[in-house]
Image 1 (cartoon, each protein chain N blue to C red):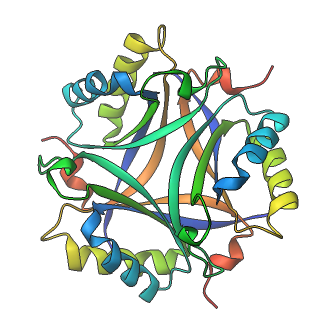
Image 2: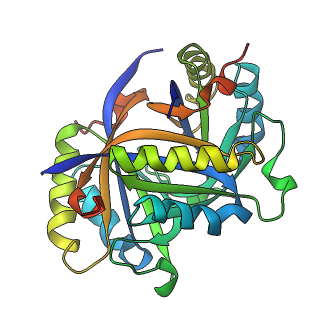
Length: 102
Length: 102
Length: 102
């Protein structure tokens, strides 16, 4: 089975940021994304249940270059004012070429 | 803490495929699986909310050999007709020997 | 984009263990966590839907040292009596220093 090495970005944030985050990751070159509903407690000691709507966990498969664009953007725009978590993992994607913007 | 290196397969698909996917991964040698409900937008530009039932995110811990059997099977059977995403990650599993089919 | 290499621990367990697991991971040094609701079938052949409340998937970003403390604790306390899954992954975390206990 042929796979392509890509980066998976996971962003955990307040649900109210969903629309903006989706806009930002697409602008940076993501071709798709997956969202699950989450809750939790962050390093700031604020429970997600204290916010209306809880948390979302947004996952995106992208090239390393797009991954870094997304993280620069998210970090600059949201980290100061919101309890956002963002991290990168290495993944091997089946038919991964469709996640590479041409 | 002793751990065993395994592969984690993640499959994101329409919820209506759940029963078939579970059957297929078990037939290929998976001993268990975890499902979370998801939504999103794929490289085909179709939102999951356009399908009845949304998406599922199915995760399976398996040996590398079983991982490749599962990906061959899923890829051959669903990738042509459905918006399926499948990828592999390396994980270190506590008491991971129980995920290895004897 | 500067990132810090950390470990992500994922613990999948019966929902009734949530309070205890959160207490344990904090005691071991975790500064936050994320929970999603899950279901599935384990190597013991028990479906999560057979338990009241289903499963939770708890994710924690920690240093390697804290990761091993958590896994020792979880393994010793729950693996005998409960259908718990625990595994480690390598992640690159944006502004990851806040997950390191000082």
